[in-house]
Every structure is written in C-alpha cells, then in structure tokens.
Amino acid sequence: MKSELKQERKNRRKIRTRSKIFGTEKRPRLSVFRSSKHIYAQLIDDENGQTLAAVNDLELKKTKTEKEEKKLPNLSGKKIIAYQVGFLLSQKAMKKNIKKAVFDRGRFLYHGRIEALADGAREGGLEF
Image (cartoon, rainbow, N blue to C red; front, side):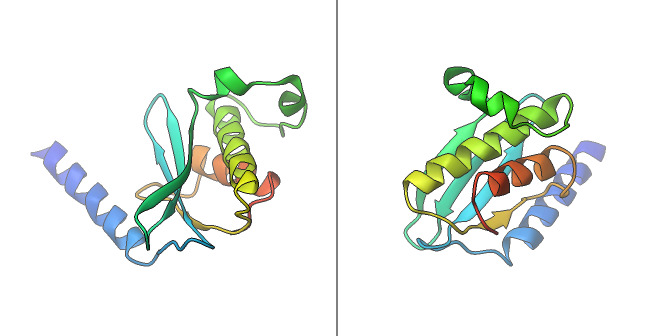
C-alpha cells in the first residue's frame, strides 16, 4: 500500500513538471533520470519524437581523459560523475550545433546530482 502511494506521488510530480516543458529541434528538452547507481541524460526533440543525443555514466569510462578531470569543481562522490555526464552531453550537443535546451528534471528535485549535471552542461556551453 505504501509503495503504491509513493509511486503515485512520483508519477504526479513527473506529470506536473513535464506538462510545462516542451522541446523543439532548435531548443530540445534535456531530460534527466537518476537511479540509485546511475544517471542518464538525453536531448529530445518532442516535435519529431527523436532523441538527438544521449549520455549516461557508463559511457564515461570509455571517454575519460585527463583534461576533463582537471576541470572538475570541488564536488564529491556521485556528484562528480553527474557533472561529467552533463559536460559530455553538452559536448555532444555542440557537435550537433545545439546551444540551447530546456531543462526537464522530471520527478527529481533540483538538488544534488541533478544540479551537478545541470552545472556540467552549463560549463560545457549549453544554455537553459
């Protein structure tokens, strides 16, 4: 019973947040999902129903460089990974000439890893 109520509250928060946000080709929606272990981010064009770019923390192991590690702000733990995911997503967006986005935090509060991901995306050059 409690878990059903929790899930219903999460869904209501997601719908409430999502109803106000819409992405276009020029200004896609930056959608964020976090689980207890991983974090995912996508740039989505809602008009055409396409994902323009997607990044998750599992890709960081493949693309890790020493230059990116030196740019990190004073963060700890999983926030560093979230920051790197945001930075990597903004780099992919810049390659596709996307400079602006609409931030969709979903059902999550703008705090902690979600905030770190947004900061990383901004640091990489994405505006929202």
